[in-house]
Image (cartoon, rainbow, N blue to C red):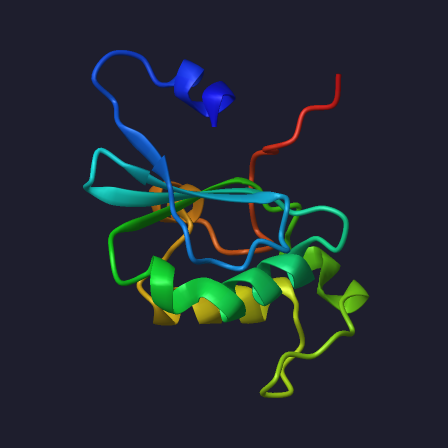
Length: 130
């Protein structure tokens, strides 16, 4: 938490959201300025499948408030064929089904909203190897 607080300058108030499943070490749920929740994600090593698992386990506690999900999702619809795992409803834990799941809770990709581009039809890369 100290590392996160050092990023937030000035009057920003950050508090870790308690009561969520702690088994997901690459997800950091935060309450910012008592006005919105921020979920920081680094989806490794199971990528989009891990986001499905985390969201299914914790969504009721996160989406009751304003929520921003950010970070490295390591996800794109072009990799759907690699995700064979299924959720409790029998749906593939792939990018398209995650998109449907998040959209049903009022969560949308800011990149796709601002660019008016569809999944799999992105005109610009968002990953730049060093």
